[in-house]
Amino acid sequence: MVFHSEYEPVPTLSLPIHDAVLGGAAAFGDTPALVDGAGELSLTYAQVDAFHRRVAAGLAEAGVRKGDVLALHSPNTVLFPVAFYAATRAGAAVTTVHPLATPEEFAKQLRDSAARWIVTVSPLLPAARAAAELAGGVEEIFVCDTAADGTRSLQEFLGSTAPEPDVAVDPAEDVAALPYSSGTTGVPKGVMLTHASVATNLAQLEPFIPMGPGDRILAVLPFFHDRGSKGERHEMVA
Image (cartoon, rainbow, N blue to C red; front, top):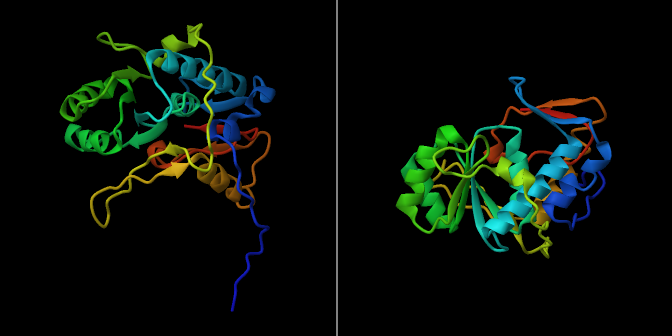
């Protein structure tokens, strides 16, 4: 007996993940897209679109290239998606790191994923530096928030005049995200997710999670395990 879903089949969405999610973001202009739960910062759709493109340009100017792996080591913040999609637009795959990982755990993931770049936040900078020293091979560490101790902030890239990177992405083959499993049944393992696989999975969620203008989505799950949602016109509260 063959079971058929009541939902229509979802065709493969063959797009780079940054285009699948943010391709229509600019059209929503000043509509809030991401809201800090503590009320300290919010970003509009136009800002998320513009900011991730400028940060991508800054990352490319710093040396990030297609095929590189960037480790994103941060708690939930409204700048997490900006960093993630900036990295993929620059051609990198993103390996998301538990913000409470020890330097030893972090270093193991850096070595295993061959990450050459780290994006973190200032309070976690000592752990990121220790992990980079243990792992070796890290070109530079950036922070999302205020720069400290000579470390550059992604916010500095918002004023970059470097050209936006135009990287050819094969959605079916190129890895967008490299999250690590929880390790429940063994040591954590990297999971290679292509641009198309993540984009298509998001499209599959649409019938189950209807969203529309004015809706607010509470982002409870940690972003390092969760890819967010497509560029619909609603707000996400981090």
